[in-house]
Image (cartoon, rainbow, N blue to C red; front, side, top):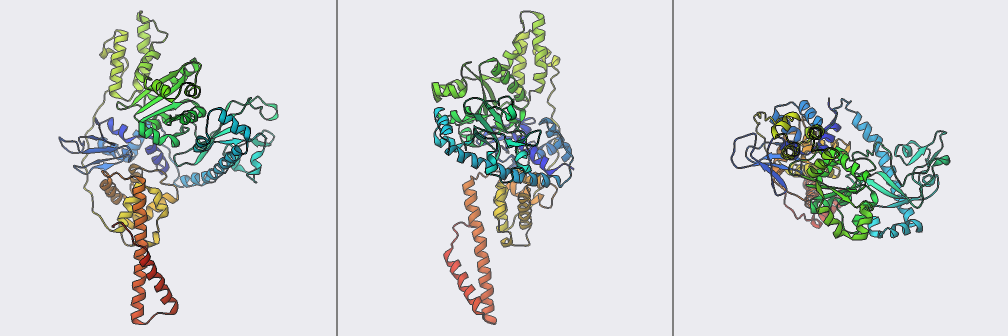
Length: 592
């Protein structure tokens, strides 16, 4: 049995646009992508793919589903085979796991999240109380507004300051969170001391880790150990994996969406300094080399990704690692570029010295991935000799094989042919580049039909599953398939089985359940509708209020009926008066 948590993680890591584009040529149409449907014959495109919903839908034949569903139907694979196929392309190992393990992990992580939130609050309070830390940030050109936006804090000097915040300083959670280090002799001390603290947030805004920058000289370790580094990061914990997270992504999302560009820098301070100067679409890796997971996450945020590195040798090595991590993630409709600053600068110093517009100008001139790749491949090779040209093609072979964008790969093959003297066909043969093979698609099955107010709530909750936690389950009319599906959604959100959003995740969560058909039908109905969060919230609040009013009317009718037959007791008369007053006071504004 494939764990539910793995399915959710897989869908969070892959992009349905990338998955479908391996098989169909997609064309941008507003916020979505379109193509002629592969599941029925048509000349005008009616097949739509939504990146925001992670869902495809054909308005001609009704076919729709997640990335997993598309692979199953297009390639004729079973569920397990489709998951293994997608996981293999994403570099993931499909686990076999006991069904209760997800709940156990969620239960272990929950108290750690609370611990990190308390630590972040403490660090923010300490920043306000430390003139030294405030002066340091002011000296770096940061205002209080930007410091607050990123939740910056300060870890005071001293070995056990967190003992004042956590009475159970010897407890397990502080070590599990990486806030406290336990020495060989069992003595504990704070990991972060005399450092500016940069909270690292997950997609839901939870603090999952910290980066700490030393103030002044690098700090001496415990028991006379070597001085600590300028930047110190949280270790890997149940909450935090460096290779998966990006600093500042939550704060940068709006600017990234507006500009359709994300800039990747190396340091926390670079992100904050750029934001201070109005370059709000920057994020940073967390003290580790860029990973394919980072690149995948970035390309889901924007069509253009710019990696910004120092112009020295270390910067170029970091860029080369980012280049390799990008090969399997990039697509023909995406752009990845590399910006090298002057050797004496980093983004923080450059934007302070030259301003935001000069930095943006450099970013617009960033070197495209293909140019940087060819530059790296040619480096150190004498192309005037046969040996040098052979070395060029030999070095290119593993990289070309990993490149998943067919049109981009074709361009690189042509560039290699020009540089090496081989023909294009010879390059393809020598590099053993696989051909793209299209498989026949199976037939689709028809869909079913709708129901009442519970259906309206279900339409809202599948778009924003977090709303399930606020549903008054006891007021939803019984006896409907929609009610049962809502109950299942409430349970899934409550136990952490449905932690993300997107139609694909919701659909896959209910695959094989009694609710799959209904959920699939509703998602198909919503495929062409765009709602913002405020609209969904307003309609949800109004619909819940209508449920409450319906319950008020039901109770009024019951009391009136009793009054006519046998009369009411004094407390029942008072209750009826209260209900009539409630009915008069509240008038919902939106139609059901």
